[in-house]
Length: 282
Image (cartoon, rainbow, N blue to C red; front, side, top):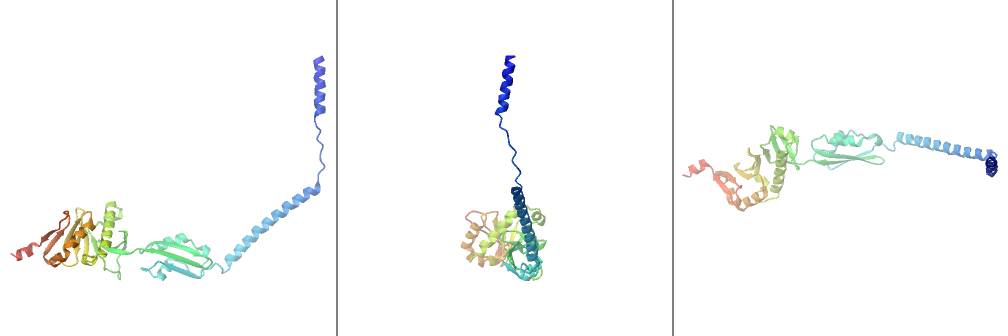
């Protein structure tokens, strides 16, 4: 009993020790001020968004962003009018309506174009930058095609196209279409050889009529005069042409009676005289 009384006294003391919370009176003026401030801010934001939207619509409807000039750069094989026609851009078009990536892809469908980049110059100009292919040779694949500076087949020859390039023969059209890596490497090596011959004076590109891949995979040249075969094998073309140039002044005089010139033996030049010519000489 004594413990129960002490416990009740302790509970009364605990209750008495609790702090009584007093309810604060509602401040209507403060609440109204806060509500009004939030409302004004929200209304201002709405007005700002609506105003920006209206401003954009007005600008888009105006002539401020209508194309007035189309500039073309980097073209030499294709004239400006053809490139602009491929782009399908017209003066008066809205600059924001143009899909620049799609336009570049459409222009690049032309075989002369390797890559086309289209960009805006605000507010009224479009620039089309062209990277063209440059023919280095003609390759015979049943039809005649141009080979560019990367050894890539890119265009079938048509009327009006220049034929003033060395002809590459001995390649298979189907292999190239299927992406045969060996044929691709050989074509790149041939283009490098052609570029080297362009820089030479003793035995230059003007003295070569054909570059041929033989059945075994070796490369040979045919001279412009008398169509004499010059065997180069599969590698070290530049070094072999260097060796040929040391004696070519003398060999050039004998081209009419030569069957072939073989450069595949190290440090030697093997020359074969035509059988008919040898027999005529007795």
